[in-house]
Length: 607
Image 1 (spheres, rainbow, N blue to C red):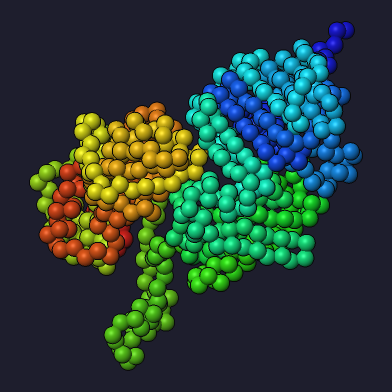
Image 2: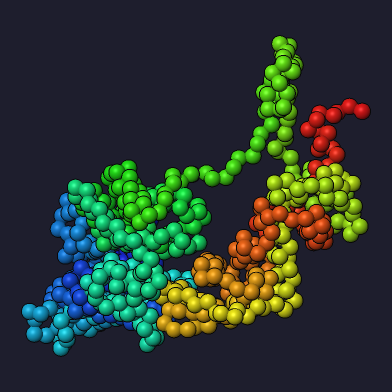
């Protein structure tokens, strides 16, 4: 009987393996640059063309390879980093699996030129799809040069799924940024299509922060330096006022390996306590030097994941380091509350004695009863009612059609609760309005109408706001300039990795602070895909985020005192909208407690 199972050839095996290790151009850069670092290089140059799709060239002045080592290095599971399985429990190098170079040469056209200082001549290898086409001696400088051309040329499906040039170069830029921070003793240079993106000469960590992130971030840094037995934590954090909406300013390194780890990120946030809001993130450059036998980096071929053998201890150590550094610099840190939202009051059984005790009655006037049915007042609040339960009677049918409210509806404002909620009387019942959510919805609708009519009212800033960006952000914002202008934002390139915001939508005011400008950039960055794709306006979370940002500063806020006349105007303007019942993020703006619902609260099921 003919067998169905076959043994795959080596080229097919390498292509499958390449899918795990080489996901995109930045994966190639990561693997090759890590090899350069492991080879004791002090200068590394990265040249990219068309986001890495056309060319990725890595040049270093490291140890280089002999001819025999170069030929062996392109084969799977060939490495100089480990010798036995026991070495996996004590990894001291960035690379160790022996898969990267074999994976790269199987899916690209690769040229390797390398030379050791002991050899008179170097080695030139030209490989296409895993097959060596040229193998000869050549003149070369000490070190290694690897040029990777036409990535995934023989896997068209994988090549088709690569993102835009800007997206791919941003991934490369961000990874280079991380390595420049982790290895300040190495000079890094990144160029794209002949343009310099990162120039980070040798120095110390703070000089690298300055060259990449700018003086403002560097001057805001607070140092961390703590050693406990074999555990060392160093680096820099910033004061709470420099926090960002985006969490990608948190740079964490374990034994000089850039990682993304929720345990350590949570420990950092816990260290900040309530000094920063729960929806913001600090700028952090944190380096953990831990015993290698307590760190497992052999979790995934890409080495993105990492595990610790003493997680509770690591968490506690990081938290205390952050907290102590902040308090030593005069900042008061409070314990971070895991759930800061105030829970709604539930209607429970309330004893008469307890109710009356909270009134102005004296003890002698309290009502006491021993009869079970009279010892408590049972108040029921149904929490499973659909939104239709709170809408005007005429709007309960056909929820899919637009909600219409008559222009001449009779509304009488009868009071305000804690300068936050407006209470009014309507023919349907009682109307409760959240003044902040209502004003935010009104501003959102105005902005949306302007965008629909392609007539966004723009306010030119008297003093343009300058924002220093990190390299990966700069490329992204520069590409989005034309789209941002459609939304009322005039952004101008001002220098290397620096932009000016010259104008903003007029509904957002006449000026913005530097802190608000940074938040705007984070929103641009977070929603860059939908901005570029020009989706349906109502579906754009970008617009909701921008309006929410300015609503916190421009809209009527909770606690703002407004007059009855202002409250009437606010409700009238809100009810003139097609859908007035929710804010841009879906929170209620108004609730109408209609007669039926009020009767249910008081259990009036009789006539």
